[in-house]
Image (spheres, rainbow, N blue to C red):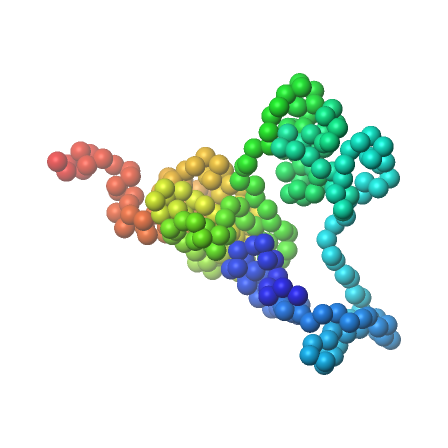
Length: 278
């Protein structure tokens, strides 16, 4: 029903994944009309939508309806211990992952926060530290990459372009996989690597990737964001060749040129004295 799929992702990621799905034979419908009902058919099922009094019918072998997740906490009888949950069953925790019972902590998917493995591990470390050592360590804000193993993959870390433009003066660098040696060698040229950089601080605010190894590439961008590297420093990292990681290095170089002009590498690699400039 939304205007595009993957509403939480950068708009360019949404467009690219939609296009890839359609190219592979998947019909993607945006701004879908409300569902009236399902009907059984000889071949499977039919979904009937209604808009302005007119019916639209979509037939398929199988209908799968996904409306989000509910926590599997009902049988735990958490209320008997005084541990409070929300309307979907997720355990309520504070910044230290402490529940409404001071000596009980919760981490991972059961809290309903970022429901991915690497965040669960990070939360588990914080919760265990506080529980065992009676500490008060908060779950700090860290750049956390997310993505999905679709074909092609997509991944992101940090701010989307729209969110970054709302609060920053930005430079956007976008490098297509069809211009990079490794994707061409592998025949996996669909995709791109997009960097959003704060023009004043010259730091990466966000990275969005569609294509082969996208989820792994996002880890590199997350490291650069966490280290608060300037984009010209990232551009000078000697990524192995030919690799998909070259996409990140190339995008960083494009951003550096936008910020400093074509001489940025010389300006950052040598001092004026070294080239004889007084």
